[in-house]
Length: 267
Image 1: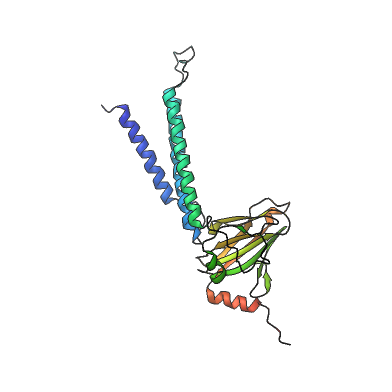
Image 2: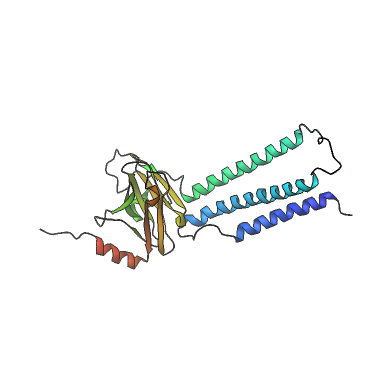
C-alpha cells in the first residue's frame, strides 16, 4: 500500500507542473511592443509561477484541513492543545527568505538588462545648460549612442495632458509619433505636479517630477497605436490624462514629420 509520503510528493509535483504550465502558456499581459517587453515578461512569468504555486498549494492545504481536522460527531471537548514547533518555524522562515532574496537578485538583473543601471548621460543634446541636473530613467544605450543615434523628443506633462516637442522639426504635437525599431530618447519635465509616463505595451513607466528633468529611452518594435497613461494621481481629472503613441514605419514617420515641421524662412 502506498504511504503518505508518496501522495505528498505526487501532489507537490502536480502543483509545480500545473503552475509552470499555466505560467508559460497563459499570457495575462498586453502585446509586446518594445525591446524591454520580453525582458520584463521574464520576471512577470517567474512571479506568476511562484504566486500560482503558493495559491494552489495553500488552497489544497486548506481544503484538506477542512475535511481532515473537522470536528467529529463524537467529539465534545476542545482539540489538542499544540504550542510551538521550532522546526516548522525555521522552515517557514528560511524558505520565504530564500525566495525573496532570489527574486530581489533576479529583479535587479532584469532592471539592469532594461537599462535602469546605465550611467546618466550628461551630454544629452536637449539639455538647456551645463548646470541643469538631469535624472536617469530607463536607458538602453551608452552616453554617445544617446546623443548620436536616438530620436530626441521633449515631453511636457501638465494637468491634464502630455505635449511632445520635436526640436529638430521645431513643432509640438499632442500625439507621440516614433518610427519602429529606432531608439527614442525623451527628456521629460513636469510643469506642475508629479505625473507618470506609462505605456503598458512597452513595459515602461517613469515618474515625471517637477524640477527634476528625467531621461527615458525605449525602442518600439511593433507598428501600432498604443495608449500613454498617467499612472500617478495628479488631480481630479487624472483618469482622463491620456495620450497616444503612434509607432510607424520609417517612411510613414518621415512623411508625418515633414508635414508638421516648420519650414525655415529665408529673408
